[in-house]
Image (tube, rainbow, N blue to C red):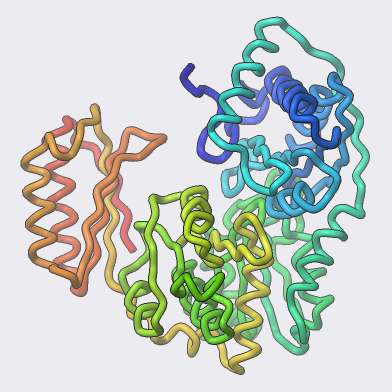
Length: 459
C-alpha cells in the first residue's frame, strides 16, 4: 500500500484539514494504542506539543484514540521534540507523540511518533500504523476528545537532564536567545539562567499564531541585530519545536550547522570523545549539502567526514551504523548521540557554549579556520521526472563542471522527494564560475524536462 499519511517527519498538514482533522488525529491515537498493547510494553504514552493554537485539540484527539485501548496518557504540554524523545526513552512510556510542524507557519501542524528507544518509528512501523488508521476511518470510529492536564514535572525532568550535561556553568556569558515564539520560549531562558548566563530573550511570547513568524532560525537577521545592539557574547535561534539551533557570533557573523559541527567536532576530538572506541577513527556525519570548507577544515584536524542524503533521519542512521557520536546538517539539526537520540537545539547550544568557555574565545575565533566555498542552489520546476543517466545533455553539463573544478568543487543534482523540483547545487572556489555552471546545468534540465519556471536561491 502506498504510504499516504506519513512523510519524512511524521504526518504534517494544515490543522483542521485531512490528514490533520479531528477524526484522523484520533485514528492515529487509536492505531498507536493498538500497537502499544500488541507490543506488550508499558501501557503509557507521553504527549507534547509546540505553541500552535491547534496543538491542544490535536493532543486531545490523539489521547482519545489511545484511551480506547486503555493506554494512559501523560501530557507534557508545551515542550520540545527532543524533550519528548528523551521522556519516551527514560520514562515509563511505550512511545511519545509530538504535536508540531517544526519551522512551518502556525496554520500547519503535525504528529510525530517516537518509540520507547527515543527514535522515530521506522518506515515499516509507520506503514503498519497507517493501515490501522485507514481501517478506523473506514469504520467511522470516533469518540469525545480527552481532557488533558499538564504534568509540569515532565519538562522539569528534561531540563534537569540538559543542565546535568554541563559542568561548571555559564557564569557571566551574555546570550541573546530567539525562541521563535515556540517550544523553547520558557525552557531555554530558564535553562541558561539556571546555569549562570545573562539572557536577553526575544520572541519568547507565544500567542498560538506567532510561532516562527519573522523570527527564529529562519530569520537570523533579527537575532543578529539584537546581538550587536546588546553587545552580547553570542546569540542562538531555535525553530518552532527547538530541535535545531543556529548562532550569531559577537561580530554579527552567522554560525550555521556546518560551523557547529566543526567547532564541536574539533573539541570532542581534543577531549578524546569523538570516537566510540579505538577501532573507529574520529569522524563527523554530515549531509551532501555541507560545505566543502567544512570537510577540509575537519580533515586538517584528522577528522573524517561522511556524507548522507539530506535529512536528519539519514544522518542518524549513518551515525548508528558507524558508531559516530556527532552528526548534523547545515540547518542546525545537530545530534550529540552521547546525550540524545535526536537533534536538540538547547543541547546544541550548551555544547557550543561549553566550547566557548573552555577555549576562552568567541565564535568568530573558533570558526575562523573554515573557508566557506561559494555555493549556488537552483531549484528547477519540472513537468516529469527521469533518471539523470537518461538525460545526456544534462550529464554532459555536469561532467563539464566536475572536470573544471576537479577536487576543488562539487556538483550535486537531485530530485525533491516532496515537490516537482530538480535541485542543482554547485560549489567551488570562485563565485562566477559556480554561478555559470549552476545556471548551465539548470537550463539543460529545464529544456530536457519541459519546464521554463525556475525558483533560484543562492548561498
